[in-house]
Image (spheres, rainbow, N blue to C red):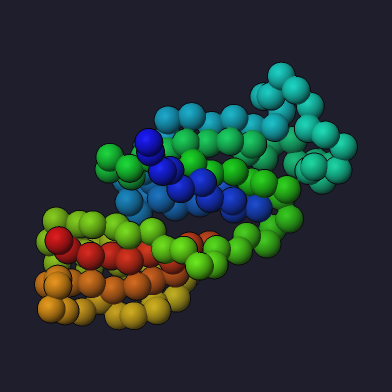
Length: 136
């Protein structure tokens, strides 16, 4: 079995993927727009004019796979009750990615030394995705 996070950015997936490419070195494995689908979306599933929005995508951050969609393209993505944990090699890398994820986002717990890590912190990026950055 494998558990893969599937994030719904409600119309901002392309922007999010570009952000993760820049900040975390994400690599896109697959991207399909609604207009690429052999089946048309059911009436009312996406607003008119959203055909170029992303129906499904898959990208990698390191060895981890994340899937993402624009969903119903409401523009109101909500990520609650879940965080993605990003394990990095050292405190310098932790500072770099933490600061990059915090750009336009919100620091929830500053990066700090703890009993379990030389650097650990929590940040919600500009899309509202919550991240734990940790050196292990």
